[in-house]
Length: 552
Picture 1 (cartoon, rainbow, N blue to C red):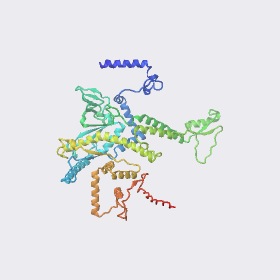
Picture 2: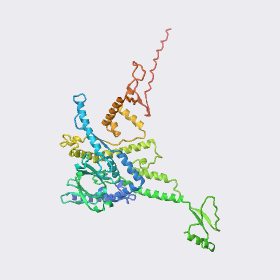
Picture 3: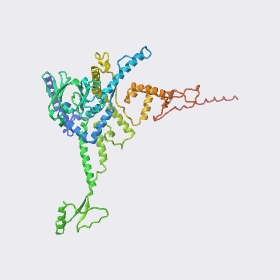
Picture 4: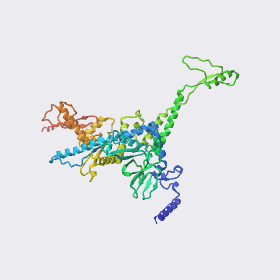
């Protein structure tokens, strides 16, 4: 019934389109017309999964080529990974132990127990971070940076959780292995006898949940592993973390972030090569000797000499030398065309287009600071920060950091490194934490530091939030401050320090009269550079009443 209704509606639509002259005669949206201007533009209507299935391998191969050979693409990859991961996105674990209010009995003991529990988790995590890489090349935060690179180049990467034996001597029996996009075949789409479907290498059950990944045993492009080519292995989905940023609903495989800029970068590379060859030719000081009648009897001897020298004239250009030419000979120099004044503006405009496609700041991709100033640099960094924070919190933390920490806690209890009561029954209570990304650097840190001080002192922001935004754990910072203060006091070290803004505002100036009126509060200068007390206008003097006129 539904099919018949759909065919009837489609037929009615065709009749109406024919009756009103079609879309090319002004009916419908201009963007959907098929007139003279847009008649040749017929984009594909297939889903992004179909596009990735058809063009994904070539797109990925070209993206990897540019990342390896093109300076701008390589710089873009490093800019993305450095701003996204930096020195690593680190956890700040929160103990589930209840801590009563400060005034209640036992508050100190409960706070110490929670602090000790947090310290044990963080110490074990710090030890395992150095052992996490299954290849033994880097640590966990180095793996995060490699994940960021693959996320930019290939649009996706797979992380396999590799359980280890207790006898291996690791702090917890778990390591991580990175698998590139090419190791999961895009073309593998087929039904299975159990009712599941394999779509682009990923096995889904009947309700659309991922249950397994069908990987090549080795990277099909690695010639050093040729004896194992053609072997596939089914890995349960519980052991695989698929990190990718889908652009459309229903997308199941990643797409390179270089995709919108691949053609432009390639054509710009060819153009730059041509300009370099032009400059190379111009740098060669070529001299040509012309003759009016090279076949005459007078030039037989010179012709024979030239044939033995491959046509190269036997004239040496030396400082202060003079050469006598034969009758009829003339000397001309090569004057190749210059690049012209349009080369640099053209390059700048094309590179801004590339940076817009990649979503990265111009200075970060090109390293060009000639046109940079405080205003445009700050605006570019703010926009890059917004985009970076979205990827950090929605992709890296959700798809990588949280599952890795959950596996860390599971294997820590399996291996006996941790033994928290109630973890097996309710592990969610032990997975509460804050993930601290690297600190975002600013152009003028003094102004930003002053703004943070004002926000904290005015109660608009918590001090712990400022510490976490700088990539540190607030509890650890407070502990280190207390330890430093105790050590300085024990050794008799006196530090000048800096008076807080709150104390500056609330205290009276030195040598002031304690009975005087309170000090005026400091307010920000309109320029935001300094703090000064507001000027107070003196009270107007009372005007004496005019004397009444004398009576006559």
